[in-house]
Length: 110
Image 1 (cartoon, rainbow, N blue to C red):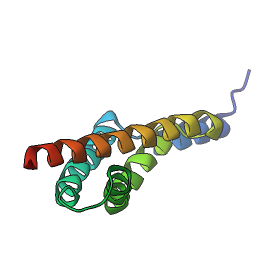
Image 2: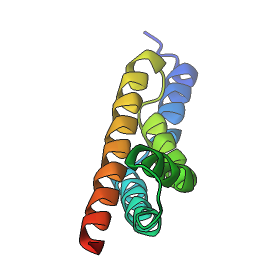
Image 3: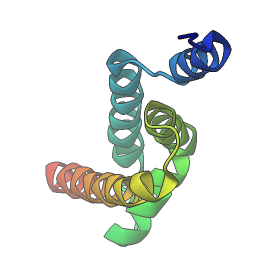
Image 4: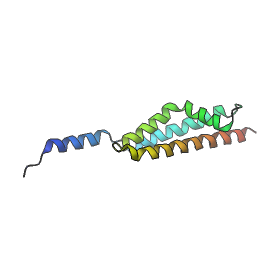
């Protein structure tokens, strides 16, 4: 029996190219965390309400958030309907993190 090596090799190569290591995902997550903490401390003294300040914080961390999002997408290539709910959940977590960080920074200033 003859095994077709070309399709098998192509499958292995393409699967390996899109792989993102756990260290890369953790580095992206750390970058977002540091950015949110830094930017929320900068926005805490403003007169913006909490939700507006949180959205501004996320806007300032757009590059880091996109890097984190891309690392998750690259980690699980293929079936997009699986990753989209996870990305929405991640966005909600990051918004909550920004709100909490701003609220703590404001409380520390009082």
